[in-house]
Image (cartoon, rainbow, N blue to C red; front, side):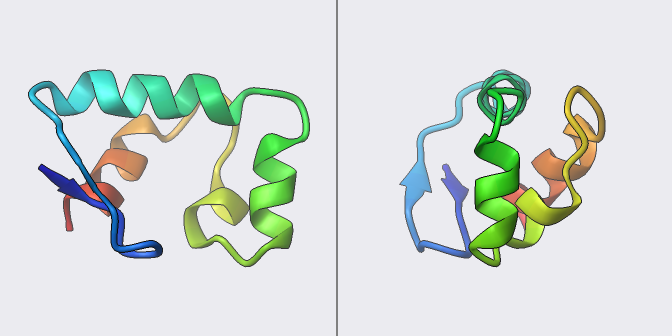
Length: 62
């Protein structure tokens, strides 16, 4: 399981790499990462499309 510390939601993650890849694709949607950043989301503010997947995964595995 992977815990989202911002929301408290738990995600099933048999394959954490697949989860990180999915999040990478979601954040690559035009405007989504900016909207997350504007709402104070820690990883959304610092996320660069297509990069830092391992950092995002580490954040979710904390």
